[in-house]
Structures are given as C-alpha cells and as structure tokens.
Image 1 (cartoon, rainbow, N blue to C red):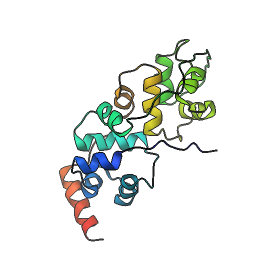
Image 2 (cartoon, rainbow, N blue to C red):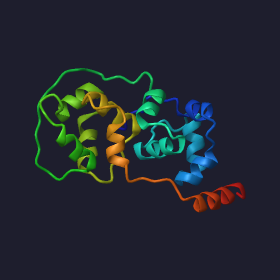
Image 3 (tube, one colour):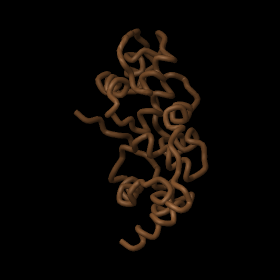
Image 4 (spheres, rainbow, N blue to C red):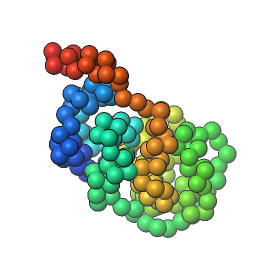
Length: 176
C-alpha cells in the first residue's frame, strides 16, 4: 500500500519567491506540467532530487527550503531498536550505514519517521526506488543530521542547465 505524502507548501514557497514554472523547467528539465501539479498540491509526493534542483534555482539552502515547505513534519516516535545487514546498498543506504548505530537502526528510523520498514529497505537497497523529499527530511531528523545535509550528499552532482539550454527550453515551452 502506497504511503500518503504529507502536505507541503512548495507552491506557496515558489509563489512567494516569484519563481516561475518556465524558469524552473529551463534550468532543471522538470516539466512545467509536473511543476503546476506540485504547485497546486495535485502531486504531494516531491522526489528529493527534484526538490534539490528547485533549491538550486531558488539559490537558497536545501535545509532551509525543506523546513519551510514541511513546517509541521515531525518524527512519529523517539523509540530505538537495532538491526544490521551486509548487503549491497544505494547511496542512501551507504549514507545511513555511515551513521548506523543502535540509535539509527532501520527499525528505529522507521519507528521515528513513520516510514514503513519495507519502504526503508527499498530505499536503501533498490536503485529504482525514488526517495521523496519528505522522507529524506524525516530521515535527517531521525538521525539528528543537519537539515539538508543528506540532500547535499546525495544530490551534489545535480546541476542546472546551461544558459544556452535554458533559453532554448524557454522558447520551446512558450511555443507550446
């Protein structure tokens, strides 16, 4: 069963910052139709990599943006448990292994965040699993990491489009 994403205020944030869909599309290749649905709340699940790219467009730290768009997102519990595994991991899995201890076990993270254990296991083991922004934020909170630090570590290789590509995409989008 798919988890329901929490409410976010991405649309309000983008509107307040006067960041338009075409500008974001031109710089990131995130389709304007997706951006419209994210803005209006029709899509509530924001992929973490897309939110990171939007943070690059806004020129604000990802940690600040996550705190702004998820103002009421909190951990479910502070209970802890222990679990170990020796398997191949995704970038997120490797990151979590580096902060793994009794307090930061998968079971503990699941209990604290409300993210179901099977979903966490998918996120750390399956390359095809797309981590959502609110999930990564909750994991940062649960592991007491600096807000935005996991976004930075996981997505630091993402870049905005070149100026030339931005202009080309803006023209294409306006001509639709």
